[in-house]
Length: 134
Image: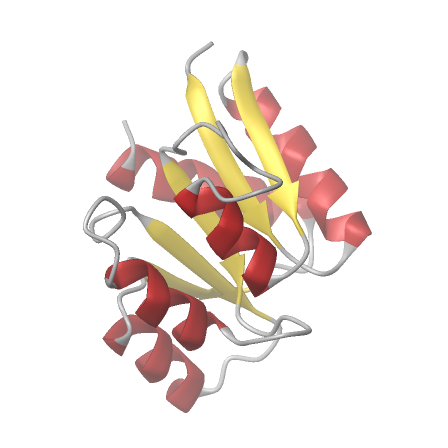
């Protein structure tokens, strides 16, 4: 296994596509998925039901989740000493400059408008991986 990645999105379809692309990019990679900010925080801090979850090399985080947005998740993560420098790619359906500014100010490593094709998403994920986790 080459490592682990966590994908956080409330769309099961997106989670499936992202998992497949990440596994293709680096065979042997473990890809975990959760559908809320609350679950992402529990996973990353090793709280139940995610006790013993691996620390991912990076996180792919949807900007708008059912329970909180990316800046809220990031603010909580950046307050955790062991997670303060974890690379996080924030994806958003909308390319609003204010969303990008808020995500980056809260500690996102990058902010990208969610690609509409798997081919483009693959390129975004590969680029982020190469820059932040290799």
